[in-house]
Image (cartoon, rainbow, N blue to C red; front, side, top):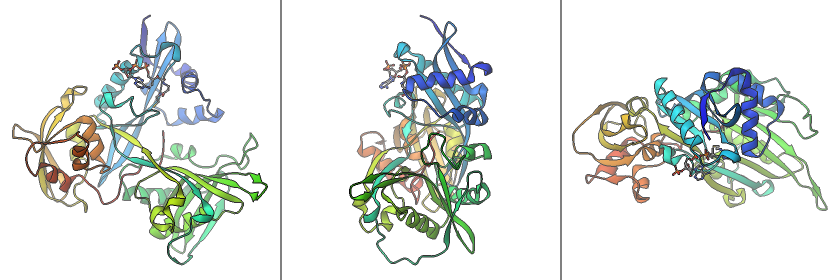
Length: 410
Ligand SMILES: CC(C)(COP(=O)(O)OP(=O)(O)OC[C@H]1O[C@@H](n2cnc3c(N)ncnc32)[C@H](O)[C@@H]1OP(=O)(O)O)[C@@H](O)C(=O)NCCC(=O)NCCS
């Protein structure tokens, strides 16, 4: 069998996405293809062809990722699939090579993805960059630990409304955490309610905005799955996204979500490990939290990536660390790098000096957004301290005050 991987012909884009549905074993809603087409750069979508048949798919979205103290271009790897009839013959490997080289050629210092299975991408230098909590809470038991005052009010909007209200909240939240994607209006279309009534008869997405006299401070997008048992209503509220730009906004939007009538359970996912809701709740255990992997990140260009973020808990640290980076998959990154930081910004140069720590590309991907410390990775036998004090030198620079958070899968 010879399979050729090439840019997906534009007239076969819908067929490409439908092929991925076969590999994933689940179909997408009809409007998904149109929405993906709007945000996709068709030149960046690949088809693996066996003769004229598409047997493998993959694509890269052109994204911007918030990083500590700024924002960096990132290739968002997506729609990766190989038909069960063609698995384990190197088609994924071939696509991953083309995709990372494409990011490199476009000067994207980062590649990011959400993995169906974490084991797949580590061989290509992706590291676990964010943790993601799933929540399966008993709403009646999820009271607040203190009598925080109820302030402001919540307003439900109709499908098609509210973009002007949610955008500033998202942008403000994004400025406070690494890991958020930049959102154009076309990206927002996929996040907000499109219809007031679901065509399949289910509950449509709802958008609620929390406002004070200072304007919108939080919003949530959710659905209700109604259910009735012999003890009465037992519906589930499924929260797709809930964000606040202020502490008050976060608190009040969660108060709203935990108090929707006829619901007994609240489900959500992708929350950061330090999300305020854990500290608002009087009984965190009843939130039914489970920790999993979130965003995976690969450093495509170490020099640009390291100079593109700020350093120190306050973003203003000074110090230095010498990294010995192993990266066989992207050999242009491999070698010793001196990271000299003044007032939070780094000057990065290749060096022959003795390293402080040795690490793989995966490990740098894990510490880059502040999700893990070098010490934590050393305790897992990953990062190696090469000089006494080397781990501390790294940990004075890379960690952030809040955990990175990617609230959106792509
Ligand atoms: C995951 C998937 C794309 C792999 O494609 P593939 O063409 O079979 O992968 P390759 O043959 O190129 O494998 C490359 C390497 O990854 C390994 N690998 C691939 N998929 C793996 C998996 N799911 N679990 C563990 N290892 C895996 C292979 O064993 C191989 O390792 P080796 O080089 O050491 O022998 C394919 O199985 C698939 O479509 N799965 C369902 C959809 C999915 O999960 N997509 C990923 C979305 S994030």
